[in-house]
Length: 292
Image 1 (cartoon, rainbow, N blue to C red):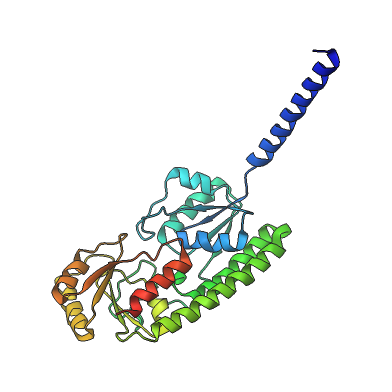
Image 2 (cartoon, rainbow, N blue to C red):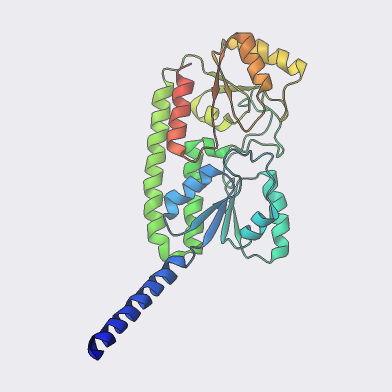
């Protein structure tokens, strides 16, 4: 092999190595992190942010935000994030207290801001349970409320990452249109619903019921299995409404719900209000409700 050929072969190899190293460095540069507490909000942020941020989830799949406790590792990871979209769960309060000592400059965005919250004991709850906060935290189960929250998410992302502002505005418009379509679909599907009372193990649907003219009856009492007195009242209500279905969630106790279903000869259906696949899940929930 001639000297010239060796030279150019070597030079070409170095150029390839340099290009590969450059691509590797670009690929390894991390995206800015933002935190969400539960999976539906990961979906919401991704719809607006696209691939401009890395969305970190606090409560793992299958976990309950009401009983979740973050690990020290999660707190340390959280301290590096630019934004945390909180929903008011008690574990968030404890985590934020811990973050005060990490000197984190993270922005906290409260998804409850500007939303008319439902308090415990309201008529929307019927026999609902007590929540730790004094209000119902399940604000993501109303597409109309998600639309308000999406605007807050977009605004926060634009402030944190102004170079992507146009992308966020465009994605927000697209997401809002999909939420409007979902809202219309839910209205249409529920038109054929005869029994407008849903019997649930855990009271997650107060905002949904408020929007669409339904009533939920909760079997769970103060976050626990029902007492004998509460169970007697639930059975009376269930027989009056002639509910053919009892909805249970794997994240919450269901012994009482199974007992009620057995007593009234109702079908048990497992649902997951925490599913990340928001549009598909909301339509599937509505189809199930409307079939009662």
